[in-house]
Amino acid sequence: MAEETKSPQPPSNEELAKAANPAGSGTPDPSSPGAPQPAIPAEKPPAAAAPAKPAAPAKPAGPVPQPWDSPLVAKLKRQYGSGLEAWTYLNQNYLQVDRSLIPTVLQLLRDEDQFDYCVDVTAVHYPKRERQFDVIWMLYSFAHNERMRVKTQLADGEHIPSVASLWATANWLEREVFDMFGIQFDGHPDLKRILLPDGWKGYPLRKDYGIIQQDQEWVQINLGIESGQ
Amino acid sequence: MTDPISSVSHLDLEESKHTFLDANELVINMGPQHPATHGVLRVILRLDGEKVMGLECVIGYLHRGVEKIAEHRTYTMFNPYVDRMDYVAAVSNGLGYCEAVEKLLNIEAPPRANYIRVILTELNRIASHQLWLGTHALDIGAMTPLFYTFRDREEILKIFEKYCGARLTTHAFRIGGCQYETYEGFEKDVKKFLAFVAPKIDEYEELLTTNRIWVERTKNVGNISAKDCIALGVTGPVLRASGVKWDVRKAQPYAAYKQFDFEIPTGQNGDTYDRYLVRMAEMRQSLRIIQQAVHGIPEGPIMAKVSKVLKPPVGEIYHSIEAPKGELGYFIVSDGSTQPYRVRVRPPSFVNLQALDLMCRGQLVADVIAVIGTLDIVLGEVDR
Image 1 (tube, each protein chain N blue to C red):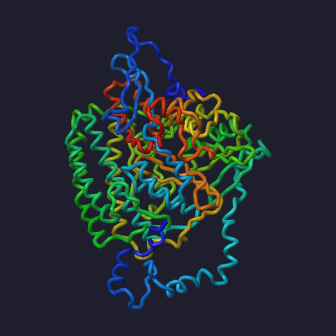
Image 2 (tube, each protein chain N blue to C red):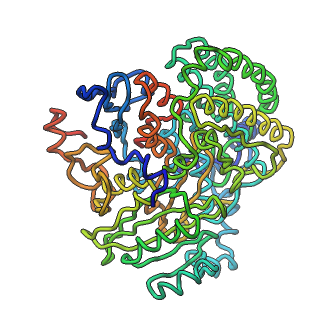
Image 3 (cartoon, rainbow over the protein chains, first blue to last red):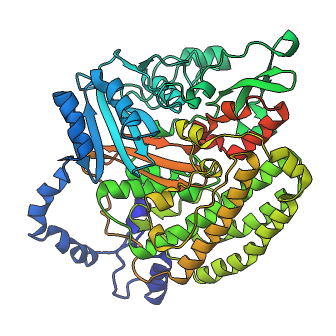
């Protein structure tokens, strides 16, 4: 962070300025830690000025997801009605789909709407929610040069159908989601850990898994050391 | 449902148990410590004599939990970590991450920063391809190209070093633009490099393109069709060598790529030789891009107005770029705090490696080395 605060000016300019003005010659150098008062009022006013105040509370809200309308969405809504919501956020479209509709919607998107490239399958953990996981499929259509995401919510322990039969690439991607989050994909040809060792206990990308936490037992047995830390 | 993809899919590992003369199938372990796996990749091969019946990759030896680390760092602090994924194309990694966060913050880097970004990223693409060519040729038995490519790659690393002090894990960009203004003589150095390297690429081609041994070892080796590439999510030069004219720089332009005139080289057969030709042509296209960028580099600021503490609004974003290996994507979820709630990296090497099994089936065991080389994987990115 310290680096970042200094960043906008090229360091060479500052150095030149310093060299030109020996310490105490009057011109305050805001970046030097010893710079006295004059530097602070010079920086403060724009931040503390009145017009900035009303803008501040509006900022955290940021842009909000807008409903996404397109012939594709209309078609899906006609078929599946309330199980599906379509949003667009920062010009990126996504569908929030009910878990039970996932296999049919994804199949439809691939077969009828030419979303033939599954870019990624991933998940996000929200431990405070009742349905703790978001599972996300990122799709791309070569024909339409269009991206979209499909999202669904999943409770801990709940299974989700695998899409490895629709997009072969989902094989490893689903294995990684299983490895990191412990989400089970039904119908996956070979669902086992991919990045972590087979015998590992715990799912590291869950929020309740600590950053330095390890499977100590595995480390002791397989590496013959007390701790991996 | 009887499309050819599912019938050739590498997912059904149990097929073809019968070997020639009903001899026993041989299971051989290759790696993880093996010079031709370009890192720590373990491959379990099922062989019938010298013929590969199938294989399985065992990965994760270099897993550092980059995505977990991201959740415990601020947006700015995580920036250098991305350089350590694909460490031979650190500039591309940084560009993808910075642009993803910029999108989330709804800001744009100024034009001058975008030009600097394009120049450095394309230089890095050439460096990455040079490293690939040298090691790939070495694997197959041609030792000379390695010395040629490393000699010339050095010139790119020198430019990086002069620009930001680092040669490999550069951390060249910042969220909102570039940290450093170009050094005095940067443009001259880049122009000098362009003039220097163009004939060198011809030199590599002279060594290999019509070399009989090279052609025999690469033609019709590790074929993959366009359809299989798409099903397996394979991107980058591998996809293009199979005849799909798709490049994120053209399909969904980012940085300043819209302003440059360049072509997407493609192949037809999707074999190792075509992938070699595609990458060679890509280096020349990169030179073209740099040529245009360095002559048209605009004046102006190099950083957008970014607050010291980054707090993107609640939301999520997916942004991808064309890294030297393929589509590199970042999916970032923000909860409105200073640290990302989740960062997902969509690594091209990881996804492309999945095609290894399909590409090696029915080939000779010696060709596995050629196919690993032609996929151009970096294990730091596969395992993250």
